[in-house]
Length: 203
Length: 372
Image 1 (cartoon, chains in turn brown, cyan):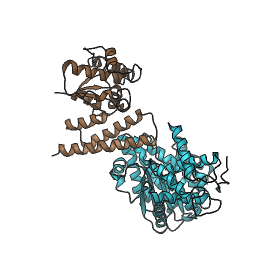
Image 2 (cartoon, chains in turn red, yellow; image 1 turned 180 degrees about the vertical axis):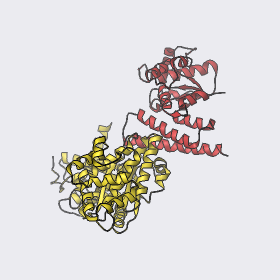
Image 3 (tube, rainbow over the protein chains, first blue to last red; image 1 turned 135 degrees about the horizontal axis):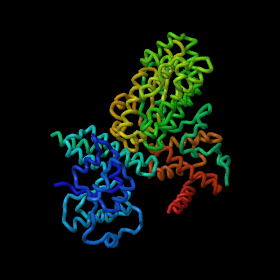
Image 4 (cartoon, rainbow over the protein chains, first blue to last red; image 1 turned 120 degrees about the vertical axis):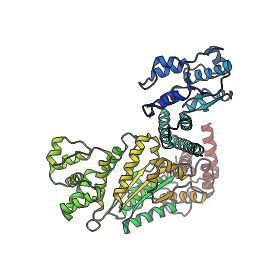
């Protein structure tokens, strides 16, 4: 059984930037999980299209369309504001809720690199209300791929963590020492998680 | 508005929250508090005078803790104290990983200046002769082409000088290369490190003729966190190659800002190969209460018109109170300067000749009102 992963634009782009073998980390993720995203995210991806990404035709099969209610109704129910900002994250959030309530699918993942939206932005505190999905960022994707793919060594995984951490840093418009310390702490934390996973994998 | 002179001060001791270069170009630049750190770095500089060892020093600690200040202080202080055979360089870690080695190389060349490099090589050529100088450089960098190029920098021919100036910045044509008899330009990271190493060895000399020491301060090394893994490996390899080709009479300080007290994190960011080459680690911790008071006292004393032996125009209890306020954030020189500067300006605006607890509390309530 595969995880079903609702991926937003930020993570889609960051994973696509990391090359691995003949593809990218995004391709690896496509192999290991079922990828889904809202129509809004698909449009955002199209606006940032890169030739290494899956094309329009392939992506169209990953678009999730809500069944129980339409998007507007969900926005009203979930008290998500009408602003044009973060539409991709909001619609992905709506999609993951719709999917669970419609089909009771487990193994759901909400994947975003926009921590602002999750921790103190447009999806807070609603994101905490529904305990049937996990929230990942692209660093978690590296840990996941390290766990399930033998071809990814610890050294490779550490390199990917460094690359993704760097990509996430360039997404953040702040350029100040606190941001630098945040990125250092993030890298440190995930390197430790990698070490823990490695210990379990090897014993 | 009351003047600083009325407060018995020559200038505002707390006005700078980042090091200001002009304040170091005096006979006795200020060093306030942080006695242990000053002692440790002074010992390193003393060792450099008497031994030929190589040192790689990691200075690490929180933002605003005094690392950059230490670099400026020791660079200017040792110049002022006639350690003329020390060549000191201050650069910041490149922000962009993609051309990091090239940027570091150019920053170092810019800091040294072509004219200073040329003068040094010309002097060495006169003292030891071409053959000896070639041998000195080539033995260290294992490149006849680059050893020849470095020697040409010392040429008195104007045309050669112009070409070699551009050569250092990889900006020469094939015709110009041919004119000076060189087979190749500076292309790769390895090339740049060899050139830097060769130039550094010219400043070091041969320990008999014009013996020298090279001290390189690289600030903001924590910015390596912004490099991709590919660029980080290239840059880290370049630094290791530089260290490995220097081996003696060379000291490199790496300033790393880290708010947590865990060295493992620094090793992770720098990489184990560079980490294992570090010979000393100096921690710029947050100040304790006593250290903070000493810092404030030394700072104020430096700027008092007459040394009163106290904290004037601040009362000691006002200093204690303000340090309690700073402690709620981080007790670093930068945070201390910010708060004390604000209070001093408040006193000036309101014509207070003495800054005691009521003045501090008045400032605090006004400050909190503005914040909310």
